[in-house]
Image (cartoon, rainbow, N blue to C red; front, side, top):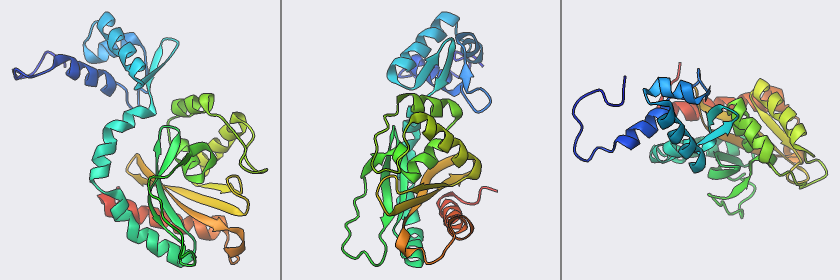
Length: 261
């Protein structure tokens, strides 16, 4: 359907806004990368017009260009951020985080990805940490955290490659990954297994375990527990803790938006 088709538009109607959205919506799971010609065909724009829209969106940071191919960048998630915030995911998740922290006696956290950082949006401190102040809105480099790696691993491969091409690795401890290549291998493993464990890379004696919170095909956030090595009480990460976190993540997603099956 052409952007010029359809009912009569109001006097305030901005045609360029419609065309911009049409260009962005041309990219989807089946067509993550498109050329100027393909975008022109999908939107019924001329090649010259499609090229101008594409290059403008590249300049604004919503598209990336590699050779003759264009692809969405994570910045397009900004469009949905306000909507998701209005649905109040942190409020829905908080009782689940409280119960998980009480069950494991470890802090539980919910984070989202914002550019190359994670942002804490909900948190429940371990019961033993009565004096700990919860700082929602805190940011940490995504590459160094279990939640960040989990969320990056959930992104399309093109976005991961872009992230790895610009990430700056700096050691926090002797256990920190040493290069973007090593981080890339770790992201592949995380994507395959569906959970992430970061062991003493951000702080000695502390491990972070994270799983994604998904609704349908969308990853909303990452759920994490901080695991102090002295408080594991013989629990197995893979056999005991991962299933617990996955169950909590599924419960949060269900309460937030209903069953996805």
